[in-house]
Image (cartoon, rainbow, N blue to C red; front, side, top):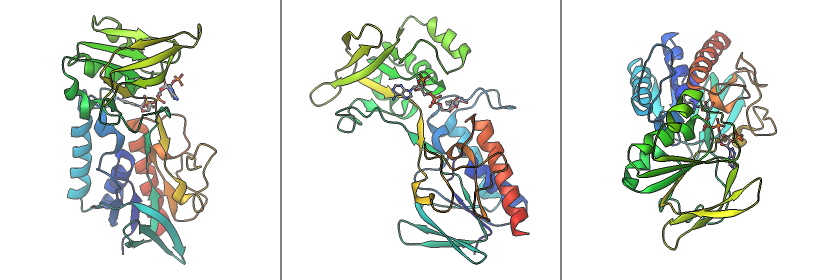
Amino acid sequence: MYDVIIIGAGTAGLSAAIYVQRSGRKAVCLEENTFGGQIVNTPEIANYPGIKNISGFDFAMGLYEQATALGAEVEFEKAVKIICEGDDRIVETSSGKTFTGKAVIIATGAKNRHLGIEREDELLGKGISYCATCDGAFFKGKDVAVNGGGNTALEDAMFLSGYCSKVYIIHRREGFRGEPDTLEALKKLENVEFVLNATVTKLLGENSLEGVEVKDKITEETKVIPVSGLFVAIGQVPDNEDFAEIAELDSSGYVKADESCYTKTPGVFTAGDCRTKAVRQLTTAASDGAVAALAACSYIR
Ligand code: NAP
């Protein structure tokens, strides 16, 4: 029996675990993949208050160590169902295990959005990647492209420019969501070229990626960019379908909740990128973790 079952061990989930443990309660995080969530794939974090510079991996490791040192448990299980039985909140996992607690925090984060074009799955690991930090080194000295205009794409491009002979940044419009500082720094690099108002329409190559076809949104002309790697960084999508009955989802699949982190079900809370919110940042994920944990502890009391 746990006090709080936290679904997800990313920044929001592990922050929640820290706060639950420090409130004298017992937390378990159920994590489908590796702990740390999306931030593990970020080469460098430079906007977390109080930490000038840190890699995503080191940040995630720090969170994990802090949470587990306080007594939180992390179980590598995929949560598939939340059941409310009286005061119990039971979470079932895909392996058939059940975890019983008094409150649940859904902190499932979000997954990489796919381009949704032909051969994307087939060429995964053969030129297509969603993680520059994980796969960048395989492309040392090669020409690659990054697709996207957010912070992930810009940071990936910056990271890859250190390894690769050439980095194309393909973005569907001229304006970028990513931080202007990073954008300006990229513009100064000789091995970075911007391909704007363009979408990737075809993936070329026999057994591995040899190039991408892009279509100019204004002229509708297509051209081929010869690259052996394409890093897809076009944002995230939530993965909350399994909890739709318990926690109401919006039309995009995010758990409907405001800053209080309450869902429609008593004893079920939500935190981080998986919930409806305007700003999805490391800071807001950590903040949600604290808010949801304290709300859960208060609910239990
Ligand atoms: P994002 O900010 O949502 O940006 C996604 C980018 O992909 C946008 O430029 C978007 O274009 C483009 N896009 C979306 N769907 C597309 C499609 N189907 N085809 C082509 N392009 C598409 O995602 P993100 O960069 O992964 O960042 C997610 C969140 O994490 C953001 O809040 C970001 O600031 C944060 N983050 C923070 C850090 C950090 O703190 N160091 C690092 C990485 C990410 P449009 O702009 O035209 O919509």
